[in-house]
Image 1 (cartoon, rainbow, N blue to C red):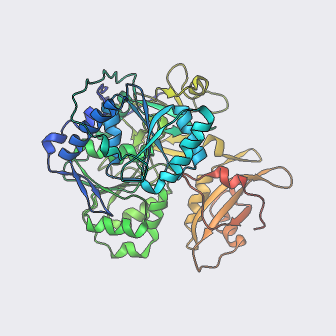
Image 2: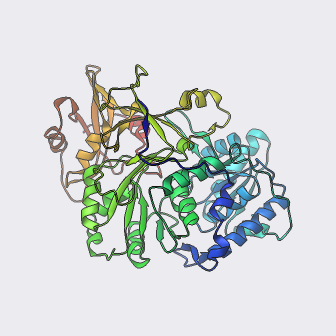
Length: 526
């Protein structure tokens, strides 16, 4: 069965990314576009447009040509979008790098993407130097490292600003790649995800059909810009609509809470760990958040109980979204003012989006009401993985369906729910056990701050659920208490059968649990 969106289709947007985002920037003039929360500097829309224009000219003078790749290695800063849109205007592609990546990880991405330039910041410049050094030794190719601030031996990126008249590159939005984030997809090593100008700009229109942002809105930016969720929600989406983005270089809970109140934030886009803090942290109850209207949570599964707790505690509309890097990144989203949507849902299909639910074993569509792997087709589906046609074909089939690797279901009203990932399902004596379900129960315990569940093998070779638990500081809790807490709320085959206490659950910057790192831990007595 093919599921369709409840909303009318939107027109495909065939415009270059920078041109679409900054179309109204000059008109907005002195309206603040980005605010550096720590440093206090504000960049207006007029200044943003001017810097983008001059940096694009400077990049062209430097020899950047259509299709060249610029690697952007930076935490959230107000210059991040300047480099992004200037590269787009010069006809280039930006590949984003995690500020937490090691030199070896960065070097792999620089080599794979064939990056021509690298833009970093002074606190990360030693890592950047080490990475380009590895590239030089591996390939003999030199990559210059520019910086957004100042660092000895490196040119500042703003030193490239030029008033030169350069020819505008001929960009084909349907074909040319605007950004090249890296994702492991449903499995395997990180791969370059080719997202075209059409992919990104059309996905923004799909989002805008159900979620409103406008001039005067204030968006808090704690999600990393290098991740596609942050790039879309906090930069492209917010700047397109004329909102003001309050930029946090990194997530700090106290700074986040202070900014929510002081900066009169209207919209917050967050990952599940932040939702846990909003639900449980005592300081939240003392804040005046009367300006806050909506919170959207995505990037990883969110427990319905936590969602409801945040909505009740803050008195704001809380919704979820779903997608992946390969979907530019959104396919499902909570629609504004849809107060009848059940908690735990990731919303409905975006306009111009089709979906199927498929049995991952048989490859056949599941019966109505049953759960299956979510397949997506629409204008937001990536162009493919850079230089990996076989991986592309394994993810996007000949009919254009992207196989997400996530298990979902849909109710009779078109509300979608993500159960778990195909590869993360635990098979206990033939029964399927979803880790996310058990994790939601675990974090509901007052003595558990966070938790993750994976499958491990017992003495008989059966795969059983094992919980990695982060206790609340100062609250004593035993393994038997953890297992009893879950056993009282699930079918017998879903019970937690192993418990290990840890200091923190390893997570990606997006908030997703890094289960691979948990699997790599040696056996430890509970």
